[in-house]
Structures are given as C-alpha cells and as structure tokens.
Length: 485
Image (cartoon, rainbow, N blue to C red; front, side):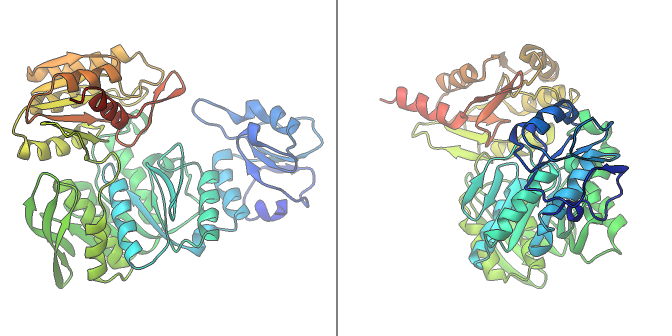
C-alpha cells in the first residue's frame, strides 16, 4: 500500500523523505522487518523500539515511525507524538479497516470473557455463521487456532488478525477487550457493533492504581459501540455503566437477581452441569449447560444476550449453549478414573477463586485441596486476599508458584501466606509447581476434590522472561498413568 494512504487522516509532527512510496508491510519488531517494510518504533513497558531502529533499517525498512529525533538515513521518517497510537491508526489504514467488514462484538470485564466468547461461538455455529475469536485462549478463525501473547494483542496484530478473518470469510468476530487494551488505545481506531460488560472485581491495580481507574478503562468500550450495549445488571459496576450510557445506543440487561431483560430463574445445580430457565424477553426455555456454578449461568446469559442482539432464534440459542462441552481451563474436570476428582480453573483473583470454591463447596463430599499461587510483576495487594479466600474454603491450601516472571517466587508465596495464616487453615508451601501438583495427587483420599487454580488454559510458566512449557493437565495424566494399578 502507498505510504500516503497509510498515514492519511493522522496528525503527525513531521515527515522527512518521500511519501509516494509503496509499503510491503508494517512491523513493530525489527527482527521481522524485510525490504520494503515500515517499522514503527513502539515504546513499551520493558522494551523501547527506538533502540532497534538501526536494526530495522539494516533489515530493509524504507520508512520509520518514531517519537524521537530523526536519524541520518536516506529513508522516510514519520515523527509522531505517540507511536502506540500511531500504530493503531496506521494498522487500521494498512489493512483497510477490516473491522468495518464484519460484525464486531467486544466483551470486557474481569471474569467470564473467555467462556462467554465460546458459548456465543457455539450459538453462532448453530446458525452456520463463521466466527472468529480474539482472546485469552488465543485467536480462533473458524477451526484454525493462532497463539497470541495478550488477551487483546497490540493494534498491529489485532488488525492483521481481523484482516485474516475477513479473508477467511468470518461473519462475526468476538473480541475480549482488556482494560489494558482500552487504556493503551490498542483499539482506538476501530468500533464495535455490540459491547458487553460482564463484571468487575479487584485486578490489574498494579497498572491502573485504583478501582475507579480500572472501571474507567473498561467503560471506554461502550463509547465505541454502534448498535447495542449489553450489561450485567447484577454487578454494581454494571449499574454504574448503565447509568452513564443509557441514552447512547439501545441497551440489553441480563442477570439473576435484578429484573433484567434476559434473566435466569429456577436454577438447579449439579457437579458437572447446571440447569435454569432462560427468560428471553417474553419467551422462556429450559437450559442445561455442561459447566456448573452460578458464574456459568452468568456467562450463558451474556452469550444469550449477545445472540438476541444478533437476531438469533431462541431454539438456536438453546442448542448452542447446550452443545458446548466446556472451555479448556475453565472448571475443567480431568478424567482420573480414581476415587477423587481434579479440576483445573483459570481463577487467579480473590473474587474468581471465591466463585469457583463456592461451587465446589456445594458438592464436596471429601476434603477440598486447593493448589494456587499469584503472578509476579502484578498487583501485590491481591496476594494475601487470595490466600485468605482459599483458606476459608479449603481443607488444605497448597501455595506454590504461578508465573513468577521477574520476582522471587518464594517472596510471592510469602505474600500469599500472610492471608492464608489469617484463617488458620492447614497449608503447605511448595515452590516448584510440578512438585506441588504431585504432592496433591499423592495425598488425595477418597472423595477429595483437588482444584488446580490460576493457570487454566496456559501451557507454560513465565520465569525471568523465559516462557517454559508447563501443561498441568498432562502432568496429572502422566502421574495417573505412572501410578495406575
């Protein structure tokens, strides 16, 4: 694409060099730059792309976007105030605004985004709509899975994925929109047909600082919607959003406790399922979904509300919700063929753990053994809260490592244990997570439930900048195979 088309309608500081040149592609990683590319020097938390401009030029960049001074090279330089924001605009232009060519659905909230996305995809599958997902479990284009690093990737990756989806015939794109993405303007130069709010609980305060800032970042999504906003009216922050956006676009509410447009009644709990009446405006149908817990009802209601906004019939909603067997790492029951159960779940906040443990409390016949940890380089204030929450429910807390990143895992565990000790429950400290899993399995008794919390779908652990393969499910299965009798 011609450079003039890429940078049109954007207020930059200056351009030095030719603008009437063809750009092969855009990159923000100098190692991926090839001859004829544009390189955007993105200033991130830990890496500053300006340090790699010379490498990008050596690899063939013919245009560079920079916030800093222009260097002495015979190429085109575009100097901007904010290279992250510029990348969002230039990426959208380069890929010819792919978000305009599909039905875009944005989902934001602390918990439930991924499960809601997969419930909704299952519903759309019933109506033969080819669906794409961008979220915590990666990107899904039909049946093609693509790994991504963040819940909402940077703007360049996002627009590249959206372009790929459009070319593959995707009708509807479901995107998990994180608070970081909204605050860092990764989705600034795009809009959504429908926005959905699930809930807010304490998380990411290492970045946002306060709950109000966290809320304000989430609320930005509902300034970018064109057709519908869908709100969990049972959540206090949902009520707050509703009060602020009620006159912008039509709003659909969902919930269990409040009088919502789409609601669940007559809830019946089971260990591996939950049943409820789905009240769909004036209609009603009985639903049975394959994951337990009230949080699963909320996720199903959210998906049903999105389906309603997309004019999907109630019968297809029922088929879609009931046909989903589960989402990897979301209350995932690992087949053990033993007299105890193992559950893997992504819960990594005090609120998320509380919700999962309440479900387990309802059905546990034996002990509740909970293995968990807290992530490094993240909000430290939530660590003792997680420890206290687990200790209130668990018969045995196994406090271990969970993506320590650049921190000392022992120090993270000690922060968690400050909360654990407040409840006075039984606990053990095992730094190595694999050893901790084996310990839980070796000490399991009849009717025990072992919850492996925090990693969920993740197949790695992050230690000192290195992503090390780590598959909890496989560790459990390997142990069971080794000790079979």
